[in-house]
Image (cartoon, rainbow, N blue to C red; front, side, top):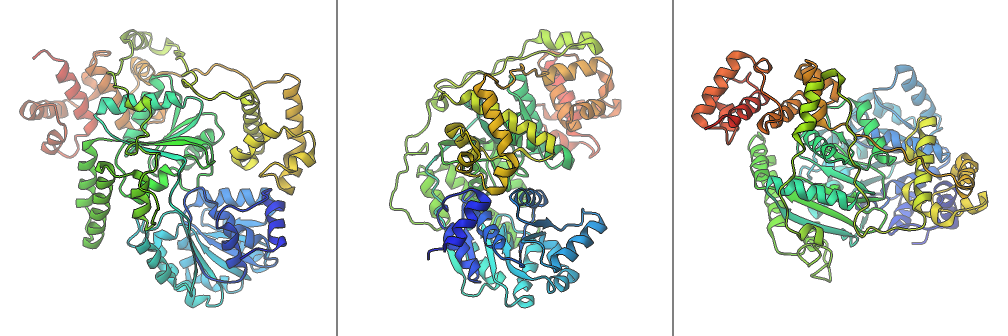
Length: 634
């Protein structure tokens, strides 16, 4: 079907886009016609616009969006507000007075979009209140969560099956980025969609290069460092399997002069938000996170996604790797797995109590093993997993099809250790130790250099500064793709700026004069500030704090780390002979028990030692004693 000029006009007026992406136009049409829909559109396909645009056009009515992610809901609300579209988020974190105000305004039809969590929607009082709201439609985001066959099943989503009975006349649209044919059928059945329009986008992302490599621990580290230096001037996401690995990896990268920040579930919400914004605004190019990071992340210019362990499912891997290359340009998805990942996955599966869920997890596990060990095209395996038939058998964009880059194929050398002198000096200096400036990685060899590089950095700095002054996220000011086009067009007037993709009426009004002024300053010689980044090496900083007499708990607090991560880093320093083991780090009775167990079981593997000791003896203590014993002459 062809959407009328009013819809295209709204797309241009609010979003600043001149045309739709594939399938968007038809999905918008289905919702405007009041039809149910099931939409499967991979990451970066523009799902949110498909329900935001028809809601924006529904004067006096409200589109209800159900999402499990508070941060994502708040980001979308802020973005819509910047575009001049009234929107709100209703959640229990808001003060009661604010919640009451939103409830009243929603009944009056003042919002075009209202975001709710599935838990909120399931409340009896919410359902009764919603019947007084002029609802245009319901949009269920992350709809795969409703299916037990999905990789992220959430029981609270099952309660959404009551929507059809409570609101029989309102259309329901389900949206997801990754759903197999079985999950799609389950979504339709659980939500009781009525003869829904089905929109299944292709799962083939030809601009992504899938590279899978089995590694030893040292090999993995060197390939990680090599790939990050390859993309030294680009945004990269590194996924680690545990919080401890996240923090260890950030420390490792900073030791090597690669600025990185962490993101995991044990951080407080404000720290997570701050770290995410640093990465989103290009202050720090490398973010190391657990799978908690990435849902709803709207950053187009990610040149690499690196996994440091086997994912739990193809769906999880496809979703996370798919955060690369959303701008349509080439990007790498590097999966560096180790044999020990298999043991970790099987251990967690065996801990499951529900027999049916355990069986489904085993199926996902075997599918992932086939994916990494097979000699079949990676792109083809992914498409087939989601039920897509292709006309090709070889993609030319994965390691199986001959696309392994030279920097991955080259032999891996043993990692170099930092000089002992720096750590020793930090210990000796104690509180008087000074931070050490590490060399920043230079441009990647063979990296493309264009004439707009300086302008790009200048506008990124302007965007960061403006976002900080207004207290909003940098991407709300301007998306990466808009920034790139701005560098190319370099408009001289508001009318020319209005022609840049992403600048609708409201955004041009808000930021147009300041952008033109920034471009004028650049033409007159202004450039981004070139302050040299200085990074305190984690080992040096930890050693200095130990020298000051700080406890592990105090060091963890100062450095924003878990105590176990601090203990692990100190154990490494002890084993390398860079600092001396201190008996005061561990209770005497614990040390005696650990040494006795290590004497019987050895120090090669620590799990048998842990199993042989009382529960109150921590892995951190065992690592420290084991490191000390390994340093002793045999």
